Image (cartoon, rainbow, N blue to C red; front, side):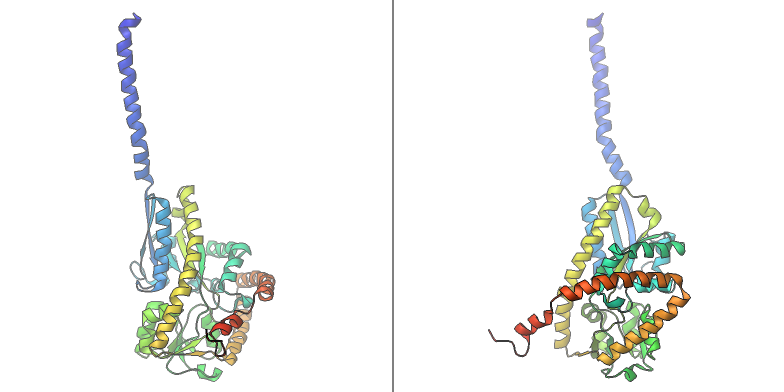
Length: 374
């Protein structure tokens, strides 16, 4: 009996093994097909701007690490919605995510502009990011978005170099020269410059140069030598005033639709977390290289650069003090964010100022007027 039934049994077992093997081979393939996710992002920047390049740099890091299971595609400003409508589009799921700056959402809650606008109690952009990640800032920005019923998750990254006062038809020598100017800026800088007597127009990046060219505004700030050169500022103005407190500590924001982000596997969410950190470092290094190259190119092009007079810088600080006093009285969250920033800045700023050597001394030793010739 046993000998007669063995071949049939072996045949059945073999068939089952083949079927199991086929299932084992197809299951991972099926899982890959089911879990492969493409997220559609839009930036708030023109396609040619280095800021849009930064957005693509972040996406590439995610895509490379995710091994095809997650892919982020980035569109330029206006591809789906206008730049200033990005936040709502991400919250509603019209877009899966985006790249911009929190100052653009100033109209939603003025406290959001504190991640970038103003002198930040003496913190530079990297210190503001330190406060955000280790001093309570992240919990505060999340709290603000929840209070606005926005279905978004925010990642701040990418410390920006100190931004110029801006581009002018003629150099600005004194505070009075700012009065009456039709000037472009965004965020709380709107209030600061308004306090200083300018007529502010908060245009998105892609609209600034055309407005300058047509005389709709007299002067404007955007961000850095590379962006300013690419966007065409040198074609419509020949004077750039360097150094300012209006946005001396700004950084970028990567936004995700929170529902879609939460639905991702833990591994992919970890990839996003670490891609943000990697992109932040990479962006800061690239900015140093590219901004310095374009600064030299602009000077060779005939653009005149001037240091913003200290009197104007002091006027900015005075205007900032009035602005934050007013906003704090109107908005409890504004006051809460400021108090958190101030506590961190007092400790971290003291440490940085005490420990950091004066790099200008070394630079001047090698490259200044009295430097020894090799």
